[in-house]
Amino acid sequence: MAQIKNFLQNAKVYLEGNTLVGVADVDLPDVSYMTEKVKSLGISGELELPVIGHFKEMKAKLKFTTTTKEFGKLFQPESKLIQVYASLQEYDPASNSYKSIGYKAVMNVLPLSNKSGKIDIGKPMDSEIEFAVSAFKLEIDGKEIYDIDVLNLKCKIDGKDYLSDVRKNLGM
Image 1: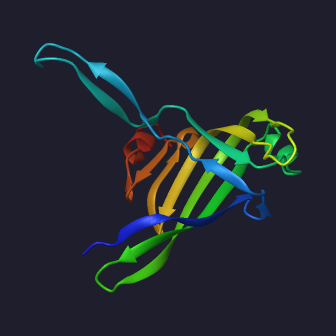
Image 2 (image 1 turned 60 degrees about the horizontal axis):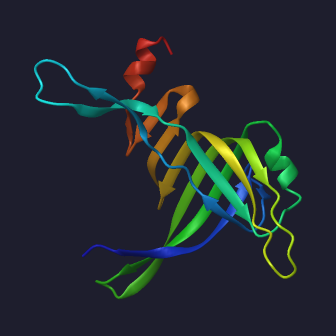
């Protein structure tokens, strides 16, 4: 019987691998293929097809309870590496036991906007920074789910490199 994935137990967000960025919620990027509609003689309708290995813009947000001193580092107009390390709880009905498994999201980002938040006594400030994401890698329990890097023509999903021939054809 398969394990039952329950929920995220906890997570920490790091900048450049070693700076804890504070207490933050993370909105990870949506990953959507670029698509093109195909309509031609020989087919009986229209079909929207993905452009393999090519993606629509990806964005991420870090939402903080308060503005932190790391805001300055995060908002510098330079590429940054943000890593989210998390622990997911899973239940195994066969052994009646719980297990924690690792979850890791790594993103190369550039800042787009910053909301400093609101000032209200006894309330969270709800500060946030939005980023453009140029690369996004996701691992669960040590297994790479995908590794996408739009600037370096990289698209590995479940271990298969979908752009290796494209890079070769382009002399890369």
